[in-house]
Length: 193
Image (cartoon, rainbow, N blue to C red):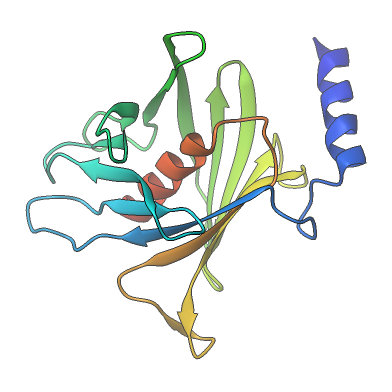
């Protein structure tokens, strides 16, 4: 198993999956108008500005987000946690295998930034959210691992944060489903504590 991990990381390094690589896919993620009785939701658009996903919460009383495919409205992902928990459970539907794949996000206590480890389908991802400029990076296993995906918040005039929140999403790897990154980013933005 350890040999397989080394081969995997060598493969990522050879492919040049890092901060200077050209992304495989890009999206735009925009926060929806926040209703008083709901937590923040997001819409995700492809390059042609066509909506492809919605991430929505049921209410402020629950800690659950559903990932919905547009326009079919099928739920293909869910992130939920017990009240006051910082470790949500994540489930994504794999249509090829016709089953749900599960994982858990764990938060590390840090002073300035937000750091998490995600255990998903037997693999581990390191997640780091920087405050300024606001960006979230998903990496293979550690702070120095290869970049899998990155969310960059849009700013006006280079320094004024957009409101509602808008992110440029860059995907650098096919190792994990894009939907996983979208759900985690929603959690981080809704539950920064």
